[in-house]
Image (tube, rainbow, N blue to C red):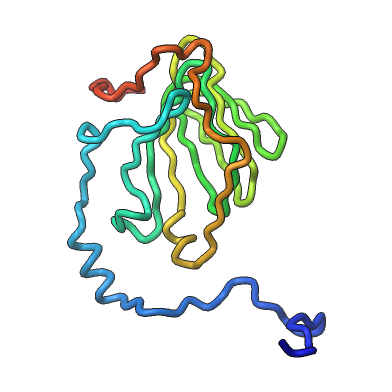
Length: 182
């Protein structure tokens, strides 16, 4: 290791690294155009629980898109998620129910029709405020893009609950719902 520091206050610093590698636009477009264009939500089941459930339509591992991670969240009555943080932003379109977020210690209330925005590097947690009814949100994130740029960081602060909330004992997510008029 040299004796000279990499830091110099008189020089500009690089905050985002160059993107380099085998990426080829023509090959990537060919790959993307061969992927499914319609994801059948009825063919998917909610995962996780017992207080929050997820159904991932598009996620980084499947390679369906270069920029989007889209999933449906369902919060059991009185349910909550893990407390966590990540580099990517997220937009939660609230389909039904009422609840709130805690972002860096600040509470933000929401209800059906609202959009809750989680900013980058924000430690946050999602809560269903109704002890008797579930809540649901469609979540959109640019996670694949962040991964491509090697800017992915995610950390759990408080893990996902393993026991149901008092109002959510025996709750099952709405797997087979056929009325989508939230």
